[in-house]
Image 1 (spheres, one colour):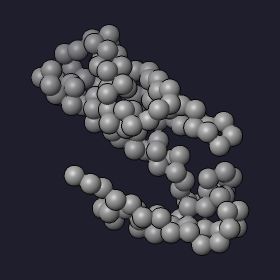
Image 2: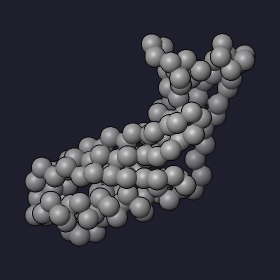
Image 3: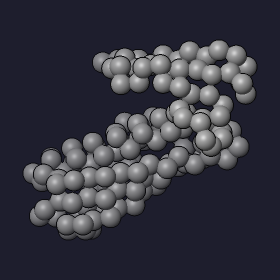
Length: 138
């Protein structure tokens, strides 16, 4: 399996603009620029936001898969991924998941999320610190 995305850029770094398009078409000529990356107020995305979305999605699917392997069916799982930067370096990702799952304890849920934190595909691809916290609502 291979997945692709395309980027187009016109102009210099600060005044230039680009677009991103994904193979699935869910992003099609989506705006990104210096302003959408480093400043507020302009509509568009940026690489760090896309990394956060990819990590949140991968981690949540990994938690769901681990629960399913244990014969459990999650009612809902909601994850927020926060990518931290210092200067021009990504310094870490923090994942915060809230889950509603029947027939499991809070401690069991936390253990599953810690396993997913280390073993989801995006976590494995990154060489930065990754942390997580679990909020269990039963």
